[in-house]
Image 1 (cartoon, rainbow, N blue to C red):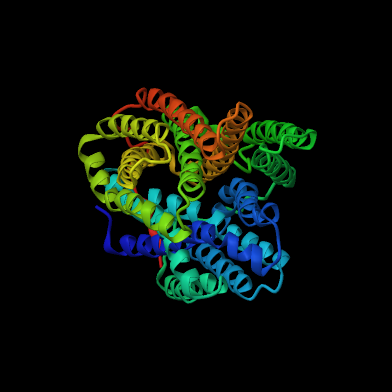
Image 2: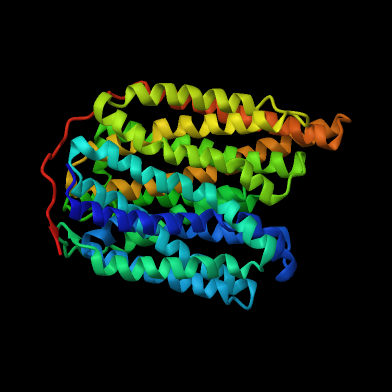
Length: 471
């Protein structure tokens, strides 16, 4: 069982993760207000999310190296201080450029916090208790994104967009100060030098690929060039890591992929994450553009699904500890496919309660898959690979999210344009595009179910001993 002191460490890390994850989605409803106040167009406003995503993609691959060099307390203090600085800068931003810079600073902290949480969890929690604890972590990871749009919608109903950050800042500062004092250090640091060529190749590869994918709806030679440069950069990065692994000095240790459970789980989670992000965007477009709901109403409608996903996390974790993964993942995957297929048949007159039920079903299906997959994937690795495994998971999720968003937007716009060209009304053409885009999400989810069906019920602990904690 996890000791009381270890539980305290995890509580503060989960609290910090909750705040930084909330920050990712809290800006969704503020875009229209920002366009007016800062006098920018929609294309420019998208940089608030694009810059965040780009920063995450560039920084996450080097977090494995970073976390091996600093103590748990140092990593926590650096991440939360950086986040608070970025949040304060966003609140007082006097121009759009400064606001984008503030989002980059915030994303830098988020990129460190999530691998730190996962790595620490795997080191201090015994294998037979990981499902329960990972379920508690998933509560924060699921509830925070669900609350983001609703919280920002309420704030914007009465106050300016700056209060979105001013509300978060004192909470984040309190968690940073108290957590830094109470947090213990897990494991030992390693004085590993950084390979700057790897860092450059990672930044160019992941950065260019994610940005190119985010702009894929605007087909052009530049976008194609960015994607090609990104793929070549990642290929060169992989080659460099293979060379460095021969002397045991990789920036991101890809020997994690030699473990079959980890590799299959990584592929399944990438597909699941891409489908989830893509469907979240499509649902927002469906409710606000096709059904003309307000941002606040949209946020409130999707909030129950996120809350259900998070609140069910601890129960899913306990079931995993007792019965293993397959009894959760396969039914969860089937439920997710069913929900995405239901979205593909919704039209302009579908009752809102049906939308709510489908979204809750999707959330529950994803919850039943994510907790076991996270636990099994990292649990199949040796402890010195935990930080590298969690970093690779994070980097893959960023690419999958960008790819999922790009693909659904391309399918939506191309199909809607084709329907409009055939004389179909604007709203009907848009919904036809949504049908095809949701159908794509359902199709790739079927592939995901096929992958998780090959995973075992549970993995044997590679290193059953738990790392000591130093105050």
